[in-house]
Length: 301
Image (cartoon, rainbow, N blue to C red):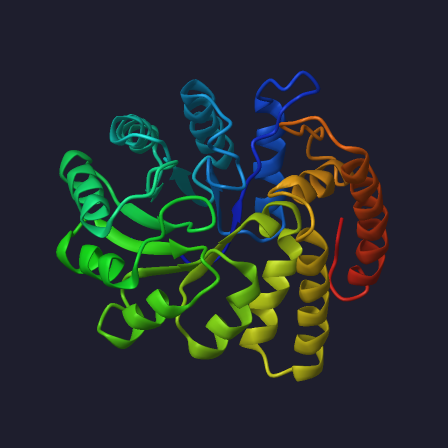
């Protein structure tokens, strides 16, 4: 299978009570697809999969698949603390029509390399569909390059990797050693320019693209063209946005952007300290100003 271009990792919208908001998810899907995304990913880190119930995650896949109606690729995150949880979610997602399942290593406890190989190998044996490895070392056991490459080489249904580590080591290894036909997905926006320059990616699955899809579409355009001045301008806007996202917990700043763009209510998993309240207000004001400047470079509507 092929996954390419700028894909949007979507938030899991919730209403003021914290309940899953299916209508808002439909709006999110339509929003990113209308602005140039090649598909969507639900139930990843941006979707706060550890916060969601199994039923909410199943519903998110069903809603997203219905909303896409074949207009783009659907990748379903299937993370969990146990193999059974991941398998149950993945089997459901593939049955619903997801083109691939995105499976991080199990949380919360650390595991060794042989544990991870057994986890993925058994998952592939039991599932009937494409699996993307998900390297998310900020939140789960890291997936070493040697393990990832070995799994992609040895297991036919493990078709590639989304690497959110901020390192290109695994994608470079796949590119240099005859695995260029695997799905090489960048999952960390900061290394996207470097990945473009080195031609070691097929696509990106980005939480930023879930709320500002225009930015990643613009990045694809400027790296395909020879307009270096426009490239520098777009990269400067990206750098500024990523710098402003960093002080808030993942994916809080993206939720604020989503609310500013009419994509859903802001719902945080814990009460806000006074410092956080000030940060939230400050980020919202900053984003409004950034939007005005970015709109002069690429359309934001």
